Image 1: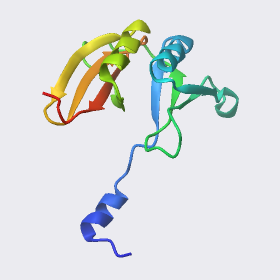
Image 2: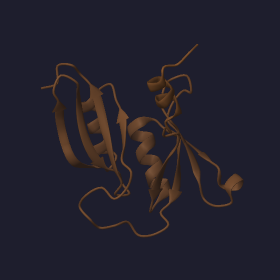
Image 3: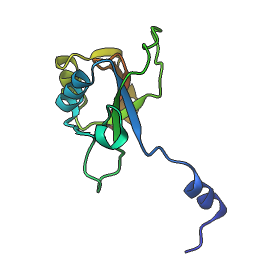
Image 4: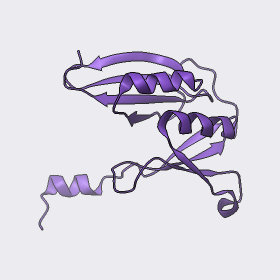
Length: 142
């Protein structure tokens, strides 16, 4: 197979392969993400020599990435905006997911809004003050 020059450049672009969530209370963060998204947390502390949990977000056969959860190494910034690399999670039912977020102790950071003809998008704060987004594809979003 011969790749075009443009395809070869795209193929060589670095991709996000892992994310990390910092938490003031790792147990509380694990409970939040398990309740909202059903994620699994595997204790890797022995392997890495410090408190660290692998975040398993789904089946390896489905596109997506796994990550890690670690105690926050320094106090979080107190600015009103995002102070980190923000990840957005794809969901099938925006409103049901938002209900789980709020029930689990999350807060709305930027309320649901349409990406016209594409999707619904919004941003939330987890129990640790970290910003994340949720995104539901919907060509009827207006």
